[in-house]
Amino acid sequence: MVTKWTPMRWPDEWKDPSALGLLKGTGINCLLIEKRADFEPVVVRAEQEGFKVAERASPPSGITVVEGEWPGVKLTESGALDRASAGPTGVPWVDSNGWKIRLTAALYPETDVWVDAVPQKPRLFPESYMLGVADAAAHGSRWIITLDGQLAAGILGSRPEALGTWKKLTGTASFFDARKSWSDYLPEAVVAVISDFSGANEFMTHEILNLLARTNQQYRIILKGKVSESSFSSLRAVLYADEEPPDPVLREQILNFVRAGGMLITGPKWGQLPGVPAKGDEHPRYDLRVLGKGRLAVARQDFEDPYLVANDSVILVSHRYDLVRFWNGGAVGSYLTMEPGRKRALLQMLFYAGARFGDPTVRVAGQYRTAKLWVLDQPLPRQVEMEILKDAVELHLPPVSQYAAVELEV
Image (tube, rainbow, N blue to C red; front, side, top):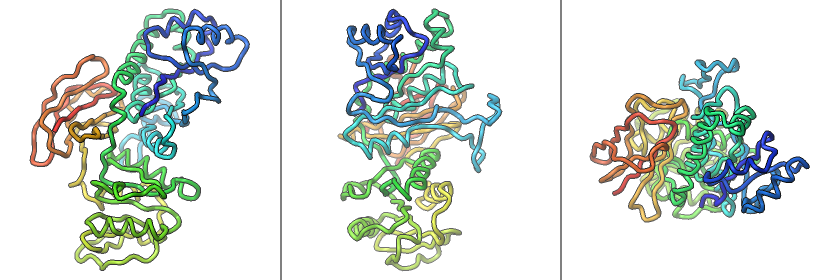
């Protein structure tokens, strides 16, 4: 469940308690204010007006704070707006906090997650702030709203451009506040990463989650020690990349999943594996084996490059099982979830390079009858052009901005 609080870091420029009037009607209800003498009048007035007040270093109980990235396309060292950093595929590198939010929520399920991401130059456009809100909220979290100094001063001084940014920012926060039930939906997944995600396993497994998200692979996080039969429900594969072999109980749970038709992707540190060599199948980095109805893919060398591990996993599982596939999407991220009753699915899309003025198309696996599109600047959803295929639907989206969500009904 997403936090009931919509938090904001109080700007240094807002020293007069009258600035609290700027929050009226925004839904912001929790203020992180530094413990300073010149802020004491603000604290007193804020508490009188019903705001929850806390310090940055001491958030309210029941909150876990993630140190995040300012979301968007990563620019080059020069900061030039027309130059972006890119990975080996040539696709612009995207900073996003979705995987961190989901991992933190799995590690600390009794708490709500906030993202602390400070706006960074030169990405200080109105759309950048909208994306900051949406990147966190789409994954069931809340961004600690933080204003750069120039914007904070502009809002206080009633400058039209700054007030326009403020309106878009708070409007985006209100959009998600009105749809908190979306956070109760459960993630759909093709592959799961099983780990304790800590110690010697931290770097590799964290980067695998990050890179799986960048490929728009729908994934699940499974914690060691919290594995049950339902953990493997609907999965095609599990990825085990830890430095130490699994304990006997976990080992048997995973192998039973494989025998029933799943795939295990792992490295030589797993140890000896049963099964027989798969005939006619080859991979430059993996030995493939058959076990029951399923398959084993065992790397010939220890995992060293998380980029290769994540991308190899997508190929090993096969694109035929993709739950979400984009055309003309650009630097897009996606998160597919299903309501507990499995009557309605929700595909949330984040366009990190800015507004899409083309015609993005997205294929979603599953049999759905209707689809409606939500965007940030419209209070009601609209119908979206949908082509029904044998085992999926193709959605032809209109030009969209930083965020869009499609609700699909079976």
